[in-house]
Length: 461
Image 1 (cartoon, rainbow, N blue to C red):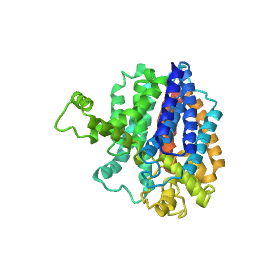
Image 2 (cartoon, one colour; image 1 turned 90 degrees about the vertical axis):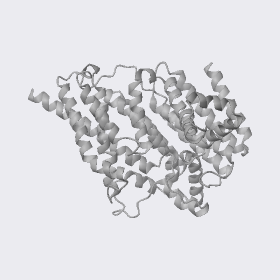
Image 3 (tube, rainbow, N blue to C red; image 1 turned 60 degrees about the vertical axis):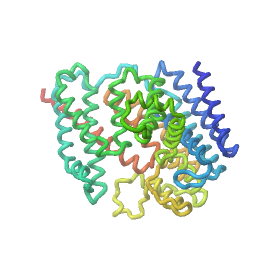
């Protein structure tokens, strides 16, 4: 049944490609990526009963949604001109698909498709400590302290004013201080459940602080999304700790829930109608069905899904002007150096390609564009960069897999990192690293303080 379903999906893609007016070479390059995606998907499903790895699941969901499905929808709408105003060359686009395939092939090959077994017994490092209540008080105090220090930023954000003339200062508050309560909440949840009832008040207050510091009013969805998804995963951990279930739910969110939410927002049904009445109206009205289908397609034709076309744009930039020889990578690694001290520091690759290619040759001046992770390797060092970036990314995923098996706190943070992959893989790299660094430092701080606090208590005991 599994193989029949996968074969059916492959045939559907073949039929879709026949309806799109693109070159044979470009169509074959898409089929190559579709085939490899289905191969990895089959492997994940096959091993679902034994191993579960959210990191790999998110990787292939991004691979399909942003680099296969969305470009096919965009090509279906217009085979030459994209939402960025970019006119693609089909031969160059086919070449781009080849190095995208190369990136994922190297990643999964080096990764050797080893999974994280979350069914194993993973205990918390504090499970045998005698002063859990004092640890809870420490986590509560850290959350309160970070909230107090963030109040000025929160008030400024709500009033629509800039928190500071220095962007880096605002970055420290938003991406470091304001994520500490969430990290404390994860640490609390990693403790033995028998302590929850006794400390439910503190757990509830920390959760309220998390909702105050990380919410849609203050943060963009790429920042709060991984946090809320992590909390939902922990809440339904037993049901979601399965490759098939996890893939089904997350794919459903991206392919069904987000597009349907756009329909609820944008389709006018006339008057106040219940949800059931709206469904009945859709079933009876053929013109409305066509409008909804158009909205579903347009959802993947928005700038949120500009990843593939930016990959093609990067290929053209390298073809015209050559690789950047690591300047984009250095800007990402040393993001924390103020531009006032480093005037030639590279901007994010999305903005860089917009300014150096799209605005000059295609008249598209919008600079808040993505740059998928494979692009970062290609724009820096060409095909060699794609290989190196893929290899390093694979080794990093192996390290994180081992890291997640230390205790439940590490496991929960690993879940957060997995959901953060959507933003990390979409890019650009400079912003992705800058935002992720804050949560890494917060994780290290909370872990260090708790361990030091427990050691001090043990010594005095």
